Length: 333
Image 1 (cartoon, rainbow, N blue to C red):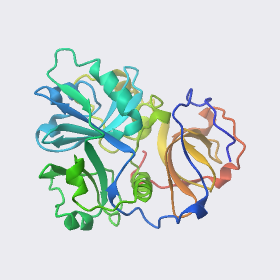
Image 2: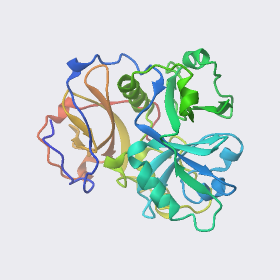
Image 3: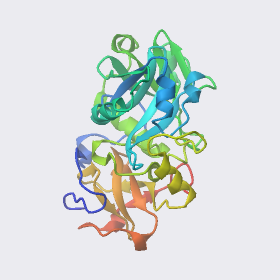
Image 4: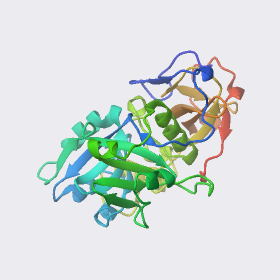
């Protein structure tokens, strides 16, 4: 295994999330299933008449679909194009709700507020008032007296919003996954399962198998949006106007300077951490961005160099052949 953590690949590593590798402590999930609250996810609320326009100037995707009742997947980046957070924006009746990990919510809202200026928009961290849940398949929705979203991808009933998770060409056999979001007391009445550790693990595993990227405190400001495959799953608009980080993201795309991409891996049993450097047998190196206990060992997403010859040197003391690359549900070409 890699002994310890180094900052050689992408700079300092902060806010490390570690997942122990003792598989015997809990049974590995045979599939990414189970539905319930996601304690690691929080929400920001954007309200006011300028909310959609404000977000249009801040995030990587076109926010116009929000006005038509459709959810939007987007990255929020620094002016240097480094991703600060990935937002799942939902057109909730109380305002636009942006789902993101709790450990980056405070830093994201602090940066966003700097750009409000005269815009008529209010930005709040509502992670304590709003419950975020994940649903695998339509059966739990039906059990909670909720319906699957129509072609818009979003449906709301009595303040409970249901949004289809946007993903690439996922296998037909893979169950649809949905975000469920609403006031704490409203979600509590739905009677969802109450096993947060299992539900969070299975949701992360679903993200990994769908090739859905996420940014946590440990990987904040580490990657340009294309390194996280956001251009491959509809998370970037290259035809909208200017937004924070747009110059670097557009230049990366049009000049063909995408030197790293996110890949899916299987890791042996060990103590792994999001943000940890990793090396493959062919010499490619990178960092882990998502991690969950899988059917055998762990499954993970990692941003890896595309060219082994250009890979940056890392301190490793593991047999790289123990790391197996798995297919994504979409092509990296």
